[in-house]
Image 1 (spheres, rainbow, N blue to C red):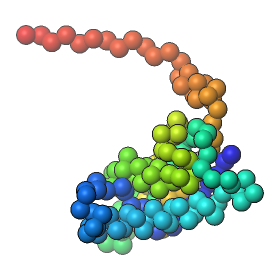
Image 2: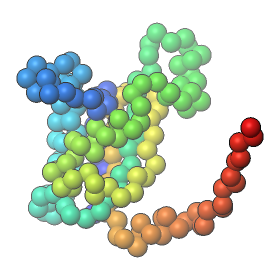
Image 3: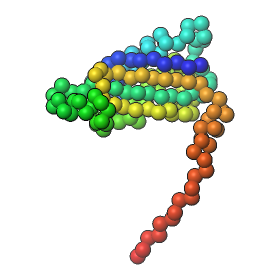
Image 4: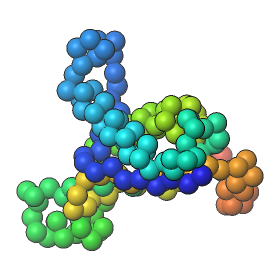
Length: 165
């Protein structure tokens, strides 16, 4: 099974939640839950209806392309560099927390638990004209996982560094 879908809007990273957030959620938590609901809705709409019978037990490969809108306050030169992918998105939120938001949002929708993600494909964050994320999901077989781990060949032994006193 292979599914690709796009969610428009500013991608929200998964925040560190506390017990208090259940009763009196902070703004970042409320924004995250709204974002997660948008991701779930887009995933449900992208699933082939005749094949969807609940969350899958298969292992998955996840790839995401997070896009962030170029700030209007930037100079023309900086906006030009950002639009031509010469300027990397090195600001917050970090990629790891963005991926966590997608992984957790799709729990019980695509997979039973995000531990079923066995391969992280190429995931990026970049500047673009509009904000959003494109998510690509693919079921993989154990042979695919083994072959992808062997693609680089055996690793060269690392040199040990001795401390000089």
